[in-house]
Length: 476
Image (cartoon, rainbow, N blue to C red; front, side):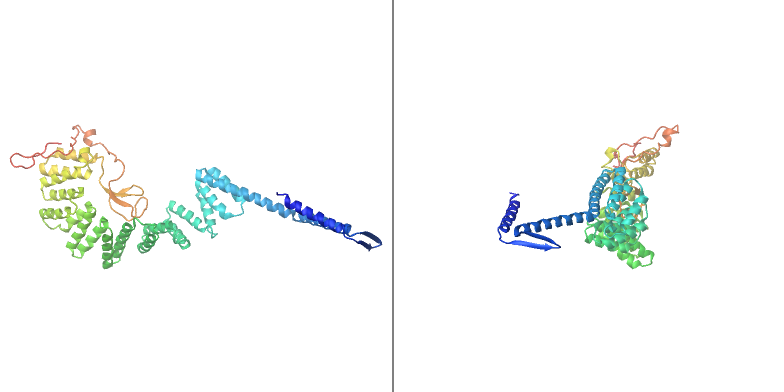
């Protein structure tokens, strides 16, 4: 079937030749003393042959003239195919973590392809993979000169600046990236983080609002905004704008009542303004959301001029906001120790350790309070020293502000982690991992005294048959 069109054409040509051959008449042509006498059919055949020879000659001349250009085109196409093959293999090598193979293919692609945007990224990634940050920076910088690769170059330089700790340069780069692609989620989150690290609270708040709108920080925005408002309040107070400082921290407290630093600052400003009752309510609201020992200290300080027994009654109001929490029992035990209510102190300490005491994983702070109780109630130095030894060797740890990014801990909250510089990553919890038991007690290593007795898990208090009061405990 494919030969049918050709057969039809040949048949038509033969039919035409036969038709011409049957035409009557002759042709006489005289030129330069030459005489040609022939038929019409032969003349037409000669014209066809001459035309075909002319066409063949023209094609040959065209091939000869255009040959070099065609050779160069074929060579470029072959290099282009090889270059893309090298580019693909280089990307695969980068994904596989083979730095040497990636660099080899990057060099080959750079030589074969006359398209730098395609090879610059591969060359930069290969340089990073091999640890050559200087070469990677050179390639990323070259990418900035082309509109199609500028954004990728900015991201590469941004990551280099962050790894090098140059937050000022990183902020400048991410601002430029935002100008190119303002809706990209990682650009908004990075810009917010760097603005917060730089203490640009107003700019960070605006970026946070835009990031929430773009759903780049959908889950944590209230927590982050509370931290920003807390820092804006501190900055306003430093500048003497006390009214503005109060507004910022009040808004932070309403956004996240469990954010202890904001509650503490709010209560402090209220107390300075003579509004002690409102300060107490703010601390009670924070305690209801998330009890914290610093909140208990601040609440006790509000009524520092009162008698210890009255302060104990005040603490009962605070603890009632979250009565089953361990910190509520610890706060009540501390107030009871101040008021010399030994039975109440022991009851709350036992309740605070009821969950973990059976496993021996008591926090050191609780052990130290038990030592203070034994010392003050019974003057039992042996039992007190035993509790102190248990505190020193406790496998549990006192709560601290722990960074959710790097795991480091600190006693006080800060907007930026002192170790990894992450913004608002510190949360109040027990530090992760197992604490080191620390050095052995001095009595167990160099003293001739016997080792201190180790307290047993929470015994039930013995009742005095006569008065019903807890009897003096023996060394635990």
